[in-house]
Length: 263
Image (tube, rainbow, N blue to C red; front, side, top):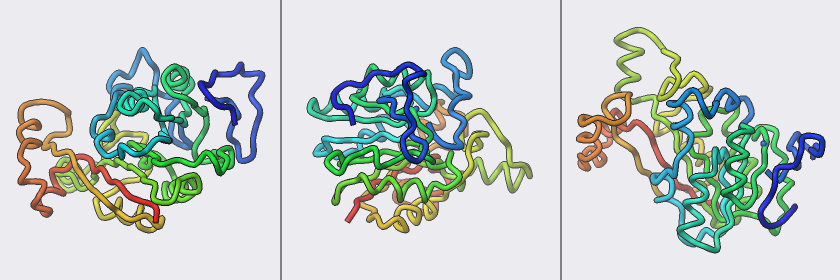
């Protein structure tokens, strides 16, 4: 594997390696239609998959010097993580070509690839990672458990996995399904039309535990309404006591953040 900052090779120089990964030191995700994201259209969806993600940063151990961001988008998260610890090496996997091109200018290495067929053997044993991030990724995959388990082959022992997933048990989902009688498909949010899997808190925990990981920390973002922002959502998120009452927390948690460790 090449070292140092990578460049996006011309199309003609792509070389297929093993299970479909392209050896372009630089490709998002299997069935996940990231290619539908355009930089000049679909503002809501684009904004949802870019940004520095302070919620994810807060869970990444300071000791993690080699980080893999699966579905790295435009590299903004990885760049912020590198700024926190100057010696960090951040590698990304991204399917969307335009986002991949952006990420190339921010991360140390980026692979343009469909993660469901990504060849994890591209990483030598000496190149294993201290932390792997799946930020709003697993819900877009047909077989999230399979991808998660495969990725653990390149995670060091005692390394961490950081996952964020939307909560299908949120009160707005209950309203849509049980009151309004519909399962809507939208451009963003809980009912994002590109979602292929849905999780409650219990489901998300079991996904990680069944992969052999030990849960070490969980967090949630609170919101009453589906649309982000606004005074009401801000007030609900500021009510820390809601996070301590599980029976209430699970209905107002819009998203779960889980940190797990490999034994």
